Image (cartoon, rainbow, N blue to C red):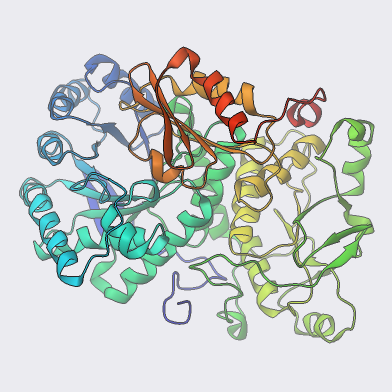
Amino acid sequence: MSGELSCCSNLYSYSRRPTGEVMVGQVGIGGDNPIRVQSMITCDTMDTAQSIQQTLDLVAVGCEVVRITAPTVKDAANLEHIVRGLRQQGCPVPIVADIHFKPDAAMEAAKWVEKVRVNPGNYADSKKFKIIAYTDSQYAAELERIRERFTPLVLFCKEHGRAIRIGTNHGSLSDRIMNRYGDTPLGMVESALEFARIARDLGFHDFIFSMKASNPKVMIAAYRLLVARLDAEGADWNYPLHLGVTEAGDGEDGRIKSAIGIGSLLADGIGDTIRVSLTEDSVHEIPVARALVELVRGTQALASLTSPALTKPCPPFDPFSYQRRESLTIECDGVKLGGEELVRVVVRQATREKIAHKLDRMGDYQPEIVYENSGVQEVDPRDDAEIAALNAGSRDQLVTIKEGLDLPVIAAFRLLASRLDPRHPILLKDVASSSENPQSDFLPALLNASTTIGSLLCDGIGDAVLVQGEPAPGQSLRLAYNVLQAAGTRIFKTDYVACPSCGRTLFNLQSTTARIKAATAHLKGVKIAIMGCIVNGPGEMADADFGYVGGAPGKINLYVGKTAVKFNIPEAEAVERLQDLIREHGKWVDAPATPALAEVVG
């Protein structure tokens, strides 16, 4: 596929993808506009006063577009009062109605808001997990049924100047798509294109795409494939894109996972508006999103590759599907890396010395290789002589970019991977030079390391990682391991998929997530999904071991994979019942007496 389609103009030099402009109220998306920051309120849509206040709180911290769920026609009708209250207070922020399952709710919401988000997976379908071998005529009949359901909304939005987001979710693809394309990035893209073709046939172009998933690798591949498909369709398919990693979770892990997905695409020039979805109060999402946008501006300011011979070498990876770069296994500082070995964590000698007194309490979370003892070869990937010498040499060795290199780090490592003989393993760095400022802010360091190293890991590049942009030794070590975990490269602790709260949520996500983590955080390698409602639950839990899902007010359904096995459990008992379910399936171990990683290296 990579030989036929291209996901960006140049994988080695930043250039923002050109798009048309879509106006959402007074806010322009795409075109020459800056990357916009969005979020979503978390309260009940029928609570008009609280909905207005949460929207104002988001705007106060820099949110430019606010989304509100409208699960029923009644909720959609109340958007009139929310929007009126905001305008009376002088707040012009565009409001987006979030629609799942209810075309009638979408039609009502479109009367009052500037944009309607529809999910192609459930706008005209209810997921039944049926296995059906559709013939071409049956599939065409299904598309015609969708056209009948979607056309009224498109015509209304066209007449009244509303925008639409065609928002595909990996977790809620329709049975029709699942049966023909599978639970894949291709299925996500085709799901969105079906709706886009209907809109275009009706002469409507004020729409935006999104391709959200909880797995950053899936999300990145889906957006890249979408961009390639849009380019192949023609120049007038240059619609803007909204980026997001859904169900990213909370705290450091949620920020890392979001940065891997969103940041890597922004670094490739893909994306016109973003939302960082955290299982926290939504005002906390905005500083993270704005910092990611600033990070991209910094990438733009760096020197790009200028040698004509090196501007567009063959890509060292398939942008549309993950495969780890091949290399040979070697030994560095007494540790094997490369080939099929785990991606290793490297530290500087000074870092190891600062945490040496803690090593006996750090369990699995050890600095595995000391940089100065590794024999790593530093090169400038633009230097023909250096690369030729490495490739001609008989020794297989660890290679990285030179300190202080004046290139964007992602581009530098991609270039290195494209020119280096595949037998040589590669050590990834988050920055080209170590940070010496002990007062530096942790959030930019976290987002940069996640974007840079996480992006390259999702490209399949990297056999070891070194975080050197964070000066605190404990935090830099923890960050390295957490990036590996969030990228799905090396699972060493419990993994959580947790959605942000919204008006559909049937329990307090923040407190529930905290209780579940307190009970299960020691289960190394177990993946647990925590979902406030059923909208994306079964699909986003497809690769989770266990799921905790709101089924009704005060009632919880428990899942094994994407299959519900326990129903209507009282919320007060649900965490304990989840533990019992984990025991039933042989995944439970008792918590160790040793301190957790955060206590040791925090």
